[in-house]
Structure formats: structure tokens, C-alpha cells
Amino acid sequence: MKFKSEAEIMRELGIDTWRHLSKEKTLRFVAMMPDMDTEVAMKIVQQFPEFRKFATDAFGAIEKAHAATLADGRHSLDQVYQALRENREIFERELRRDDLTWEQRKHLLELIQETGRLASQKDTEHKHHVDGLLKKTMVGVGSALVLAVVFVGGRILAQGKGEHDDSGES
Image (cartoon, rainbow, N blue to C red; front, side, top):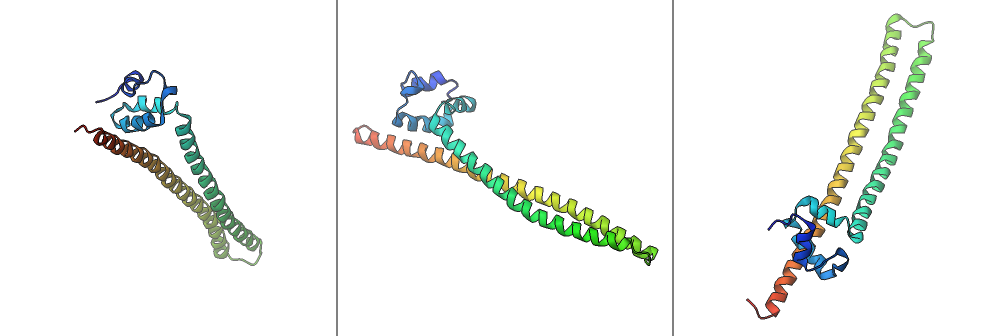
């Protein structure tokens, strides 16, 4: 059965407003989620402060992890940039010498250009690295959210079956 509206879901749960959603009915609601239209399920879930708090905390953790990764990576990248700047300064100082041949000057200019290419390459590598870490973190948190819903849904189904068995019905 595919639930296409909040009203259908409320009727199935036997409630007339989401404020009347008890703990047991919340678990039943989660078990029903696979049979709900995705947009309807999301609209309903947004009304639950506890679920929103869990999701907000999870994404807050992503943001903190991302910020820490950026800070750590930025420090390392700054050290690389500093070393490249120092090399460029040395090469530029050498270029000011009057006793250099054209070949030596050309070589120093090529070294200066190479430091620019290396800086650009390191920046690109850093951005790819950070992007990859953020994606992995988001996948992990998303998986945790899905597993939590599946776990709770499975428990509801198991409890429902146990209650059914306890009532003497087959």
C-alpha cells in the first residue's frame, strides 16, 4: 500500500493530529515509511522536533568535521605555499646577479614558473581531498540515519508480531 497523503497516514495510525502521535505510534509510523510517498514522509518527519534535532545534530557533526579537515589541510597547504614562496624569493634574488648567462636566467625563470604550477596543483589536490572527505562523511551520516529508521522499523514489526502472538491470534 502506498500512502500518498498525511490524512491517509493519520487514519492508518488512528490519530487526528501529529501531536497525538504516541511513542508506539511513532515506531509504527517509521515502519510504514517505506510505503509512503517520499515527499509526504519528508513533510511529516519535518514536523517531529526529535527527528529534526537528530538530523540537525548529525549535519552539525558533518560541518564540524569538515571545518576541522579544512583547518588542518589549510595549515599543511600554507606550509607548502610558504616553502614555494621562499624558493621563488631565492630564484628572484639569483636572477638579479649580473654574472648569469642567458641559459642560467632561463633556468631560474623556469623554476619560478614551476613553483607557480606546483602551488596551483597543490591547491587543486587539497580541494579534491576535502571534497572527498566531506562526501564520505555525508554518506556515513546518511547511512546512519537510514539504518536508524530501518532498525526502528524492524523493531516495530517484531514487536507487532510479538503482540499478535501474545493475543492468541494466528
